Image (cartoon, rainbow, N blue to C red; front, top):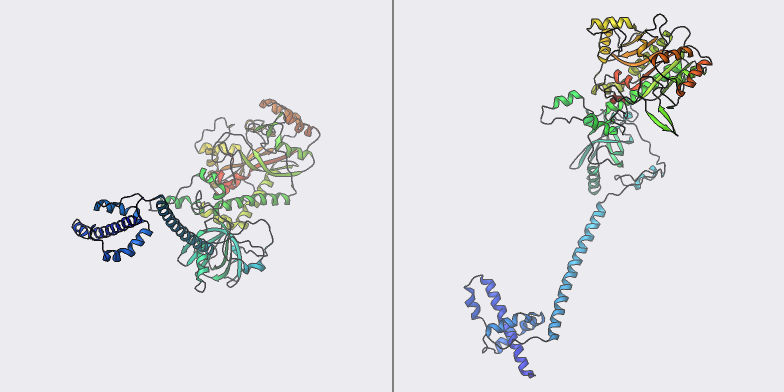
Length: 636
């Protein structure tokens, strides 16, 4: 075992060598070239120059160097360079101490790093929390001052009646007639049609009921920069077509692009009630453009997109937000309302007949069938049989508005597999012309009512789908079959034996001729051949090849079929045999009702969608149906 003095000398030698190595490394780093090497060697300590000056100069540095554990690597290298004898291995205790010190330094460094990271995260979380826009649970207008002025509305789950009085956009303005004038505060709910945020300002357009729009604006409040910044941030998050609640002050303004052109709303509060997806199937503004406008844009740098019919129908709820399409549905409702009004005023009773029936109700028309608890049932092709049984039940005049189903695998622009039927049936005293007069009066009431009471909707529709007003006569315009055959022959059509049905081209040509000759878009064609009419049609008394039946035309297109019905049960049986139709269980009750006595009667059935389609001059009946059904579409 070495003596204490030898151990001490060895340690001093090692320290000295380490110090020398440090100086050499520093000089090499400072020099950065080979020329620095001799200078470094000049400063390297020799084994014979260990004196008091060196111990004084390096004593403090040696202590620090040893405490930092540098002797583990530097000293052995220096001893090897000097050829000295200080290369002994460190003791296990020394190695453990050095390792512990190193791990302690590493742990401290990691702790400080984690502490710094945690501090930054906490600061970021605090900043985000301060900037976060919280949902607003609006319970009462009396507590409004305690709510944030912006933020998504909490899900409306009928928690309370808030006491807010929502205004209609159409009631806002600067005119004397406006209900909400400049200076008044109003709440409005509507769809966000468009929004533009730039710097500290925002302009948006709110749309209500599809065609009423008003501009709203917001400007940065210098007295509340933080609140204004959050408001601008929230406004930027809003997506078009979202449903929003907005409270604002009515201010006088000149706005060209909105239906409210003399006022705007200065935003005080705004909350999204239902946010729309950022990416939509198409924009409502694109769905609202006329075909002429789209076509004219195709040669420009920014052509408008063409929206195909299938895309529109796949997302019909979006398509119906376009003002004109929305207005078409309102006109559809108006037609039904006016139909009811007119018939009620004439003593008719509204009935509701079954749509699941045992057999076909219309010969020659396709029928949908289904299983009915082990037996075959059909979806009603019309309420025809039940209208007639209602007459047998002593309802002298009846009508119905209800669904009608036709399983016809056809794809023309005027065909639907399901449509809404406008049907009427009435007892007659002498002649079925009594019914034609009623029908003419009903449609005169519809046409006049649409133009006078739904003029705004018609104006909106005609902006996108141009059409002229329907012309009609004061008294029924009735053509008979021979006159129609003569007109069409003059037009160059081959009418054959005169007993065939009219084609679409024939109908249009006939409509043009009637418009030129009689000045009307609405007329009736009487005395159709019996062979092309249903079994329940009364034959003409003078020539059984023809019948007491009629079609009604609008703009040269058929919208209705009607006839005097055959109320004699024996004659019905005879006609069924002639047409080769079996009188099955579906007709048993129908025939029996006649055998128990029934008044002579006549009637007609209209397709509501066709009436709207032709009245508005549309290019496809699907535009007149809310969710159309055709051979290729059963959804949405």
